[in-house]
Length: 106
Image 1 (cartoon, rainbow, N blue to C red):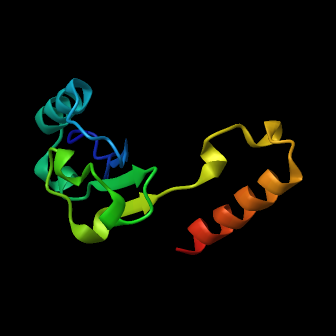
Image 2 (image 1 turned 135 degrees about the vertical axis):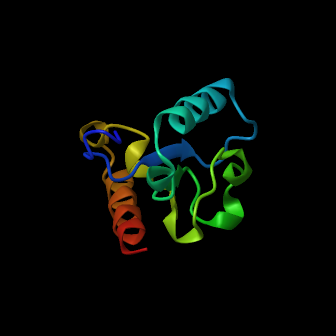
């Protein structure tokens, strides 16, 4: 990454309601810390899924990096729970559409 100058940042996506630090999180952290220069880690963006706000997120302390608050995002949307084309109930489609719009506006 440092030699070819093609990487300018990383987006780390993780479930925001993970109650424990898993081995995979630790492994990923070790690889990333050992492979990337600090200036890339300084640009790390974290997206927490399955939680809408910081107050509902139980995974913030599981991040093995320092992340600037402005680089932390929370995203919860039922559109990702099931393939959209398989949702047949009009009421469910309406709810998913409304929540998608609301999430994108936040």
